[in-house]
Image (cartoon, rainbow, N blue to C red):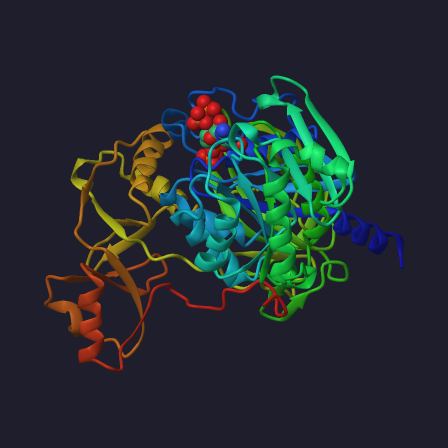
Length: 541
Ligand code: G4P
């Protein structure tokens, strides 16, 4: 093996690139912060959440996020933990931004599903879980907030299995809960871990380890008053028969479950250590040409996110790319697959909220931000060999529509520029009406996107955007059997064109479209412009 190949394969081995999915408020920011803390990336707990009340993480930088205290944009954080390079893909918590989250999941090799012990499986978690399943991503479950009164752990397990349809295998088991939550029993390592102190970084966490099976007198006495009930639950689990199977975990059919409290730090380190050994390192990504070997194939990457004006002091546009194979070195010349043009990757950055550091070298699994004058689009592939094109990204059908009040806009040029940019970022989609000279309808997956659009148009392009709501709720792209006449005279629908000139039918209800299809059986309507396989690797499922 030549030295470069050896280096690439060693760097891949030690990388774990994952996203954390959860319902808002389950503790994602807190857990992220604790993981980064273990990795030494943040100096003290609470640094990620610099203002307690505003609740925004290092990754939250957009003004609107600060104002509302929500995380709407996803970026990437990284840390080193005992030789492992951790890349955490941050996903926005708000449901209106699920499209951004879906795209981020395309760049992940595994997922941590965070569940609030008191709430169980919540709707947002369920939706994101479905995407992970479609991608065949391995999913690790962390049941958080065990320091508070919560649902019965056995109940939580069956809820995960019933609602999500995945085998849930507890790697460790909570000893006590609420104020009595004192530790976890590691079922695989056969040891009890007891915790004291720790509270949100305010005091040092003390960890005591007692090795032995549940019958061991020292383990029993360590469990204290919880001994009987814990031992009973553990016996029940052992008797249940489903064995931990790493291959099933890797295939996304089984989820290892961990208990803990991100706030007090209880159970975070044991979770992190097991997770890092069980989670896969970057594997072969699926391209149109077949799976792309991360070691053998020269540098290749795809764009999964574009963000403009991240730094108000520097007008710039950053394309986030996930490296899939080979080695990135500063100055590398690659081919831009969509246009066939060469692209010199001269300036790239690793982002940590507002802080930036230059990147001179990066490997598969890493996400780097490329400064881009406007050539790259979401879903684009860049590669050194030029023979790779990664599977297209699904665009999601908007469910909310607004008309731009053009008459009230004085700065038409700035408006067009701003809209073009924000559409490229994938925040909103623009539609042009028949006979119109420019797009006048914006569509979004969630209504909050319109606020972000208005805010950013004002802050970044100095345009006061006025929008008036439309009553359409569905957008569908005709694939076959379509004729303009089918919708021309209906008040319930509208024919518009997307930015690539494809016809799109907007409708007030799905029921109307169903009746249209019933009347025209040859008509095929898709909920994405280009319905393609949404799959990570060939052997994942
Ligand atoms: P999110 O990113 O998933 O939306 O959740 P975040 O970490 O912001 O946590 C939401 C709330 O839950 C926060 O409380 C946080 O302190 C709390 N929390 C997170 N993990 C735990 C845990 O393990 N146990 C307990 N008891 N609470 C937890 P908050 O009051 O809304 O905010 P703050 O005042 O603490 O910042």
